[in-house]
Image 1 (cartoon, rainbow, N blue to C red):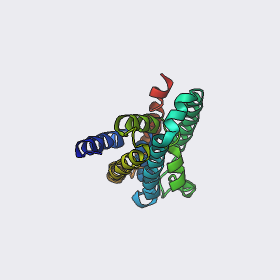
Image 2 (spheres, rainbow, N blue to C red):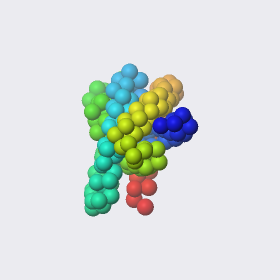
Image 3 (cartoon, helix red, strand yellow):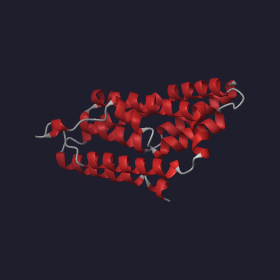
Length: 198
């Protein structure tokens, strides 16, 4: 990969990683409700799951999906159901100090990683990334290079959302405001389904 291509990929990775999407909205809501430290496994899970998805697409999963287009609606359906489930969890989240709130928890590392495989934005970005930046003449080396560089940019980019949640948490100490935020975050998460349903 040339330096020019690497810089273009890094900028692309930054823009796509920091823009609003299901994973970033979940991070924001998680930090507001459970704190930054408890949300760290989710941050690392997002980066790991997306990197694995990128590698899989670069190593042939994208071609397999092109050959089996009937799998696409199934993946979309799974993604929509999981997003709705997560939105429901966010809408019902309560502050840590409230009775019964100990039952709530942020996504675990493996849950956040697995979510990338049904996250509509993750699929769109991963397919576009590999088609734009991977060298078809050297698929394995290209997949590793693209996924590695993307991971280096992705981790700090999604962490910005977690840090923003830390700042926002101080404003949401009132249970009524926190409840309103959780409902708004859940609605925003459901709204990310719009591109999937068009």
